[in-house]
Length: 543
Figure 1 (cartoon, rainbow, N blue to C red):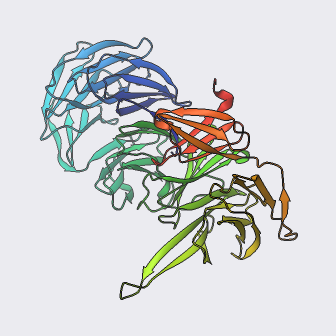
Figure 2: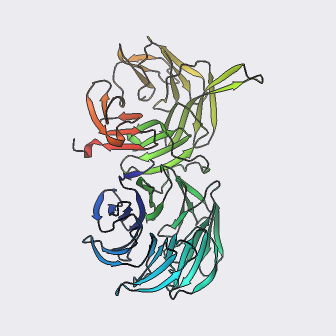
Figure 3: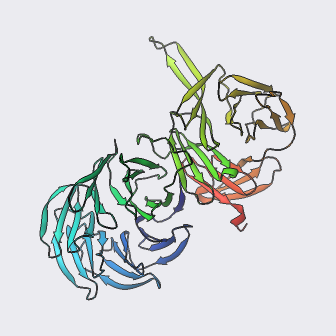
């Protein structure tokens, strides 16, 4: 979520970028290329017979080197999609490939405990280096092209191209250099260390608590570092006097297998289901720095479509709120809120400030374990100040909760009436009642107006006025945004406009069962239990 997502039937693994071209290796043995801006597929390269685990572009972007579980290394022509050369010799899966800046040789690391150096012109293996354990990662040094760095288990080794060990191994699970070669970053368990390549002086140190960092890389300009740890990626700015994490990327359903910068502010990452595109930008107000704990992909509990601001906002069961760019599908910011295990929620950007509300009911028992009592509260949280206020209520029949479009109120729907609370004070500022029926819920609110859909009376709406004019008036005009009623068929979801009854769109396959959906006449946004968000622009769909 989080991002523009490209899903695959075959597991993606290796990812590499050259300008706006992204190459992805699949479990099927195919390699696909994607447009780094739109995410659309541009080509498919077929030739390997098994999982493609590692990829690297040539310096000019015209060629691609791949390593596969079929025990071969292949050199591809990107323009034609054809195999130029195939290198044979490994006896087990190839886990990593690398090339030097002059592109005269290829290094490959394998599960057969060897590193092989190949001459590109002759296709001969010029050197075999015996490694203590499978070779998880390998790369040529950008400073000394005759040096090769490898990772085996949790040890980092350095070799020359003749197979001689240059330095004793040291602890580390991944290592990479900045594009200009002046800095190197390595990770080991939860520690990330950035060093000056020449002097070895430590430039910065970071830590991802409760995580094991497996992959790291620099942005092309060397200002940012990203680290993958489990399902989460973290981004640091190394140029400030006090280097700090500026972004936490949440959205992968499984462990991140690979990541790479496609531009100074764009990142691509893959797990075993999808490739995600991230924009490393911020909202006009910087998001709260979040701790890594509990930032995992979780069920979407609410979505808010704000076309005027060009964003969709999703709240998740673990309290994470994410802001998505409608046009690109990229995650602009994520916030860890104090919310935990709630059922009704809403989030909106009001004057570029995030406001999040949720209804939470907690149960407590007395010491003897028999006398139970519960606390029912509406919590209001603002990202700008990180302040939390709670409105205690006595009812246990809450059906929905929404923020007013002007950001002044919170609407809470119960069985047969709506109460409006002031966001500033938490006081009740309005209440309306109506005949109860079980099919209603709050529809999108606009300004100080709120609607419910009543099965027998149709669409009902009220204007709750302003603090200066708090008069509540019945209104008849429809809301600007409408939710959907979803009719579940086998493998198909028909999404209907609640007012007109018109079938707007049908979704099949993995997108057949959204748990939340909104429609504004152009955009359809849908949220899922998996934590994924779907954005469809009907102006660009052929229906």
